[in-house]
Length: 593
Image 1: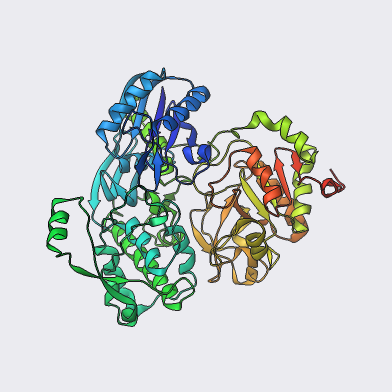
Image 2: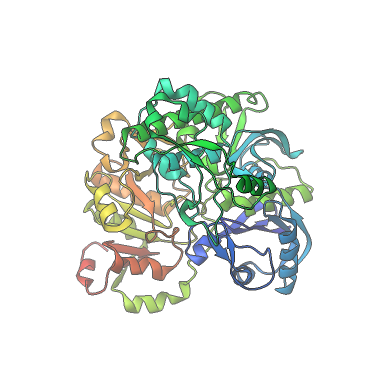
């Protein structure tokens, strides 16, 4: 049985499930080179329509569907759609699919958190599990518990009221974090929290904030609202912290004509005053302490939610956008509430197409799910979209073809010499973390590497850490992980005796967003790590995403090679061919290859 999964809205993605297994996935952001890119068909009429942080045009969805059809075919047993329950759009999509020649037995709508939960469970090794799905918003809830079994499927267990994703995102605005184009500040805020101290005297207010936060509708806008424009801070409970009182102001919202109540208040000039908390910025100690305190409170509330359902199963799957919070994941892992925990590389909305397709495949199939007997590989994305241009690119850039057995040793030596190397190999890794196939690799032993990488290539905020990757069988010598972390899902710590030796991958509080890799998961990356160990004494490298500034992880060869000219990246490895910038063929004059 073949099922095509489609998820529309931000992080638009498509997925292919064959015989109950997720075999391929593609995200629109990689194709269009714009972070969190969304596609819609709320109208079938061509033309730009404002949609939150960007404009959408149904012609872009048509182009993407054409690309998917060329890659995976146009005949499926079922099509599964996640689009937050937008009925008119669902109907338009069916018309569009028919127009483009797609043929299928039936088309199904799958609710948001159910799709998240299905992706978590049906990629797990479990026959029975509690599934915890939490993020910013879903048409079927905000914080949802499921009980999933092999013969009974994924069933709703409880819908909670806590808006975990929304409260964490709002915290970034309070602290002065610059949001991404889609308005999210969560990832950056998690990095900032490591600089602060969780204040015990603030904790009661912080926990109330997590429990009581409700999103205030953004200010009315003509057009789009990129980078969080129009966001309204809700400082519920936090504004009551005495130490932060000097930062509190009171504002009167001008609600705009969106609702009858809004129109009446506007007419009567009776919009209530509300407290607004804005801290001086990310360099400020209070901002750092508040993010650390809310992070601790947020984790405590997540654990409290799980404690109430720990008796359902000894196995747990964690999904939704909040499943990227590695600090909380570590707390869950070490809490003792569960024997086994399954994380996935794409728990955010970028995995919803796969989840929707898996839900339909297992619901419509006849066999009970017995748990996956193999590692859930993250390398499910497409080959580079412009692979056919490789001969042309070879003519444009100096390059050197390496003998395959010698590649790990050559790269290890260059990395030990503090070269910055971008890697493009095979199918890309799904989800927001680079896991070796679209990565920039660097030497973690160089105390200046973090600053060098930031100045030469990444240009990120000063407080954001870089991640280590280590061989799974050796990671425990250097880090405090209690299990493999193949998807960078859990933030552990660098062991004290290695913190000074691995400064570029150790955050200010000693933490590390570790990726572990076994040879059967990624032989290429594992072999480089072992070759690097022979030079450095540790099979550990710095691993960061390969992308131009402000763009998603790349999937175009030309884009990666252009970074040789636009940044100070030293080399790009495409399969077994090493490229350097134009005019510098001498960089390829090394021995041993």
